[in-house]
Length: 125
Image (cartoon, rainbow, N blue to C red; front, side, top):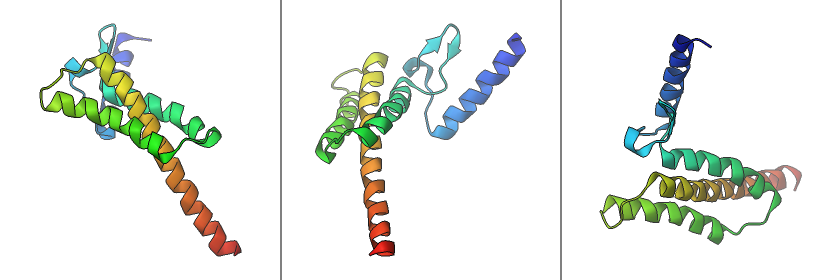
């Protein structure tokens, strides 16, 4: 692959990351060689968490309380960083992002199951 083609793909990935809603700050992003990830460390974690959370939500019974706690881990890190109590690191952002991604995915799955359950009851009941 030519260097020009790599640059084009990277620009497209960065545009996609921006559409995802990520701030893409270089100081809060991982790099692979000289290439910045298209989303920050926390958004990278959230995306990983979604991939982990989806099969968990389908296969395992995770309580809504536990899912909310997963989300609160990410929120706590963000708040501690925002108010200046504790400086977050990219590693911490990644881990808390994974927790938040798992939590939100489990909550989304629970909501969708309830919605489809109600729809099925109305159509068959």
